[in-house]
Length: 446
Ligand code: NDP
Image (cartoon, rainbow, N blue to C red):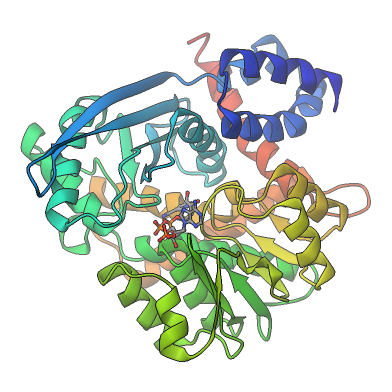
């Protein structure tokens, strides 16, 4: 490791002990940025890297609620307000039992660069709770959301901090959270994105992350005169991002052969067509069942406790969670002919896996670029809320598509190496950094 990166990481690890995912995210960015900062000393003198890795504000709070049996339950709530140099804090809420401070800090840190890449005026934040919505009744989820918002409301606002969904937070949860915010503040404002279409939401927001990651794959392929048509694609997850990545790939002529959840994955060699996808959407969004039921329904193979990367494919789209592709799996993907990875999830590849992809010189689109379509469309939802004027499906989709093309162009600008290989990791990190860093310098030592 570059000794300058080593020294910087020693400081980060000492200040943020035990926050492994945060260390991982910061190290990846530091590896891209430290050489760039050496060439651009104004960032060094202003200690931008040191400042950008320290949240502006961290809020941790108790979330007590009553379950259906009348028993008191206690969860922990968080909001990390990471950086507001270019706009109000913006980033999702995650409800999952694994949630802790280090995971949310990694997500908030990534969000700063991602939001900058979208070209929209949004700072970075992230939040959530160790609450597990699985197995809870709608009433329990509602009571939890109301209690969570009863503390969070005083820290957020349409011009201050605008949360959205993430793992475990979809349309249902955003509805309950918004209802409680409105009641507490007596204000109907765009304080959350991912809202229902009848009450301030944007068309295409549910589709945006999955569609955007697919558009990004398409852009990467076009640099080699190639396209998605006819390609076999492994997608992981079966939630929001995964569902709409599958839909868009299929529309563009690709064949998605896998879907997964935290218990295992299904392999459907004929492809998950639109009817089968409808089944998954009903299974996951309404019945809240397990992906195993797909295998029983359509008579395909189910792999318990396994991830999709053992299946041969041209394109891999991890759309479930962090660190879901390890070094061994990355090697297997490459060996089996996979030459495109477009990350719908945040940091789904371990550093060793990323190294494998870069060494093999495949088209590797890291999450902070490839999945930025979700937050970009949240930005478009904020614009529509401010104007009090909704846009059509086509208008939002066209804007999303253009934003993904622009993010790709930024990565090409900052990531193209002498031999012509595009290192999208460097491209996204440097491309996302410059605007935020310049804004921080302009605003003084704050
Ligand atoms: P959902 O909750 O809708 O779906 C998550 C999916 O991933 C589910 O299939 C879930 O399975 C699976 N999953 C979650 N945790 C794990 C785990 N620890 N191991 C294996 N599988 C797991 O979330 P989203 O689709 O919204 O988010 C997926 C990823 O995309 C996350 O990394 C998120 O940060 C990222 N992302 C999301 C955006 C959005 O707009 N929603 C925007 C940008 C990035 P199970 O049902 O068993 O839990």
